[in-house]
Image 1 (cartoon, one colour):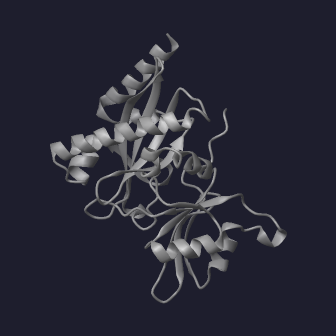
Image 2 (cartoon, rainbow, N blue to C red):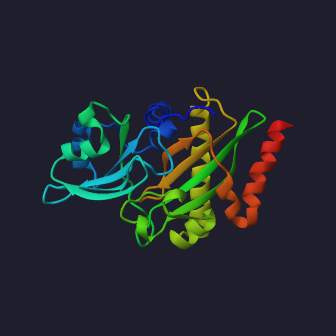
Image 3 (cartoon, rainbow, N blue to C red):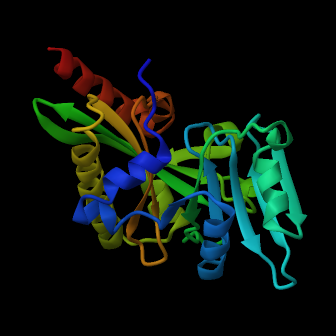
Length: 257
């Protein structure tokens, strides 16, 4: 299986195109100094392991009025963690549990937190499946993933961590209260952005398909969270009576034709 593209490398590649560059969260390589800087600018940020998936080794962290740092999420083993500490050095030791033995747990990145647009603050993500069909990138389909109640604090939206898969229309019209015109506008913006992402990533990591995780900022504009170079399509079978899943499979057949 091909090696996944690290989150930092994705960020560097996406910075190179004007459209994708303006639609990515502020991202920096993790260091205590960079974390301190970003926490001064944003209400909260995410610290994510560069290469793990399935919601492991990802923390939402903020600084409270009393100066303490509170974070929650999942450690590298996927166990939930929710804690407040007095210094960022203490957080650093939790990120790197084998620090005393001189071992780091791999590189991390820091990413600006994007507040949720939903009525009750439930976090969500839009998964967009982009496929190469006869030399052109097309969007095979998209769906929404919305965090259940227990994910509201950490904002981590992952099927392995208690998120529900719903159709894109249900996400935009019911959860985000968009009218038909706004919904159409947002879907078009997501399609355009997802295809631009594929065009930027493909020269370095050529694949026939990508799974792109996209959020929406408070203005309803799409924000790129992550690019998956070996995307699963299993969750597409859970929405719209498998219609989107069937379309993706049909495009795969045409790719092989």
